Length: 381
Image (cartoon, rainbow, N blue to C red; front, side):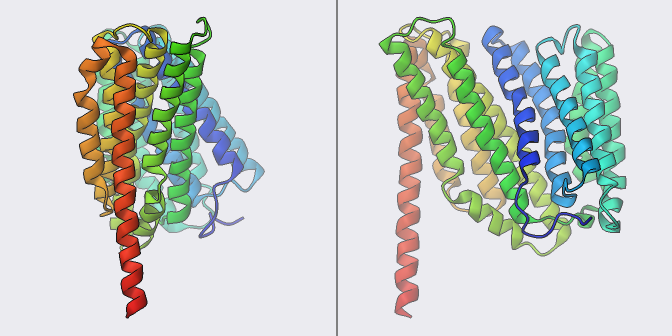
């Protein structure tokens, strides 16, 4: 057996793993549709932060340790079971299901470290894992303890666990021990984004289960699909390839690892959170298509789109890729139209869609003109 070969593609079992992880997106969206208030929003953001850290950890894992044997695939399946427990516990995570959430997280963490120890004879990776494992283990213990304790203890311990995993990359001494296959790494994170966007469309579709189909709510559903498409277009319009190349171009292993953490770890948290809140806003708009949205629903839709745009702008800025300004401008625009939703839900959907479309088309046209000009200049030399 060998470690993940350079230039390897994402395997089907990794995609299967992502499908299990993204079930959490559906669970978060369903929870917020039923309880859209500041308390539940804070709970979702807290849980998502904790969960995303370990998902990202598995992306790093399979980048270094290919799931190429029965033992590795079995351990990965066990990790999937842990994520499934976490997802199933989400609706009651701050109630009777807290211990299930904690147990699932502990299982995911133990499997993650165990799999890393099967990185053949790669001493560098083993060294990195031994430095990271205490932070992950401490966070898992905090999550489990919080799940077993009531009230403020749960909030406090889970917030402490989130703070610990956020700080972990900066507390490690040996980020330079990580070796990253940029192609596999970028592809893996890109796939989880597209799967999450697809899952959000499914979540919106489920909103029609108890509704009579009308021209208006069908139109709202299509508008929601179009918004999801522009989320996709923002991410998958060539920037994902430019990001891969930018990561591959970094030669210092420690800097490369820190950039990977910032761009595909922290910035992508905003992308996933944005997808969740867009799904919530569209689902509520479907249910009340001809009415005014209540303020939380209108805020969820625009804030979700803005979080996605700002997260991607940050991602591009970290990697020194052009295009962040268009996304920041679009984020400001979608936030500005929140009052439209409070007047009429469908009006806000149309406005958000038009703003996102205008921004992405303007950016693409500028990119095309710049590349065309460069090509002419190079041809003339």
